Image 1 (cartoon, rainbow, N blue to C red):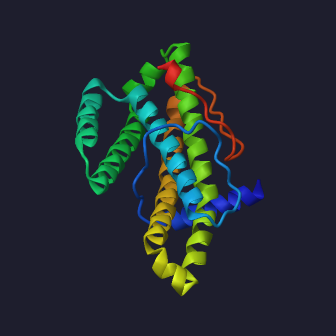
Image 2 (image 1 turned 180 degrees about the horizontal axis):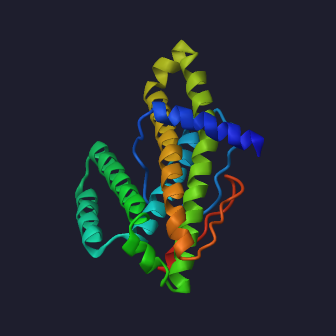
Length: 224
């Protein structure tokens, strides 16, 4: 527990110094992410993308649970634009914008008296849906925290060899960008999960958190 706490504190410091990057492909990983050290940048980037994807989907689910009809319609317009965009850079920017906006709405709604009153009347299915999404958000954050030192080590290893650095310049930049994005996940999800506590309390939902980054995510899609 002390080791994980120290690691998370370290990553939080890195995250505040970094910008929160692109948020990945919106799909939930089907299997736990291994956190074993690896010198393979492709393997790291795959794990990082899946951690970002889990966070992305969890935020989206929580947003749908608390956002107003008007807010959801506005977000659908952005998603339509995202689906119609073919430029990768623009797609990443839109994904980032959507997730940041959804997080801000979740935090705002969690403090709103009307939303808190509505949460008291949620049925058991919605409570389970929110609980699973909350759990997955915490899991995505744990995965991101565990992957940051691995990515930093890989980037350092590539950069320390001039021949490698030149040959793998594109891969090196991808790893560095991913480390920044993962740091952003840790800091941003920490704010969202803390902000959600009053809402979870009002709905009488037990806030269970994953114990390890290798835990399996819960399937919330069948609870919508």
